[in-house]
Length: 556
Image (tube, rainbow, N blue to C red):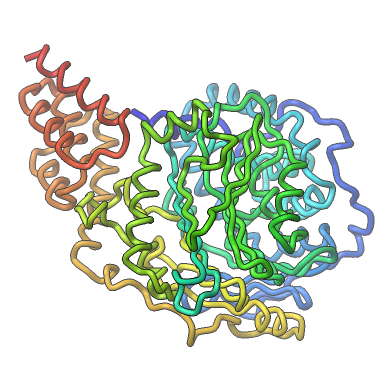
């Protein structure tokens, strides 16, 4: 039930990708386009995996990751970035559109929702800086062709930058569950600061397929990198040339009534303009946001990490005292949120505390962290004390759905980004200083990755368990569709679903749902009880199973 409801709400706020804006915006929503006619956007295609516009380049490396370099002012970066990555942008848009159309195929409902979306975003432009509006406008010029004008394409691209926030606002529905950490002093092998995170934001497999590691050399501010996707100028994970890293984790939010500053643009501004945690805090304090989010900042200059915890009505900063590690999942820890009702409810009802405790356990078992050990932590699929959760369980650090995993060593200006699948592929290393030097020299025809420092893919990728999990995911979608369509499923397929992922509660719950629908209440009870005996991630899921057991008994 939670899965279906979350997807409907994703649709509500993603509809902008397939619809024109039905509420006309005043001309002032447009950024300053002075000089646009002088900006060269004609890209040169050298081969299937290398494109360039002057020094601006897009190259696909041997790990399947696209390396993007952009320089110049905001409008230049947007236009050239849009031109270089147009096919990647289209893949993202089509991935979301296919998801939307499968969830809500009725055209009349889509028309209603696009009016709602336009109304929700009616004042978003007031909360986005002129610089970022110009960059977004440039990108929007290369979005999928639609039967509307550039104003609508621009507004749709602008609205899309709030999609991450909307997904996180729906943490009442637990769409994602990111986990991150920072360690230093005695907790790392060399004593230097190290940070890592899993970005568990999932739309569908197509959305996560084409990843971009973007290196940005702006006219104003610091050079920085971020791990992202086509059409996105906001930051969810990144580090700048000063050794300041930024990652974002969702907190419990009310469903917002009006969009304000997207969190990814707050994080982007910190990356571009902050050198210290103090400067990062100052930037975040000035922003009005419409969801709750924890922003983890790592600082090479200060040799520390902290959390900036923002929400529409509160602001807090959390630092650990007399400790050498910092952990973040999806609840807030600063004094300002100690009595926050929604935060306490999150801890009580969701899996955030479980993942926090598991990360604490893993860090205690690996007290001299290296990049290899840190990657192994981000890849861990087990529960507390190594218990079996079933693959895909939201209680795991690695839920096998992450868009990416990422590691930072700010002192060394080094970063590792995960290749597909999930965070199980190789963690590809980059040295920011060396990478920017190569880009600025121009004519980059080969990857700037530091292959010698890269971490190999996980052994799990080549295991029978992983192959079974991939089969499970496909079969799970097939059975889910059959249930929603009230079609018949063979008992053999239901048994196979469980055999492919025997420790996962959802496999049993799915079988229970099917038998309940077919009025075989005796079997429904058996499977709902089996699900309840596994590691169920949230109290709401437990309540659902208990309710279905009672309903099944009443119908026997």
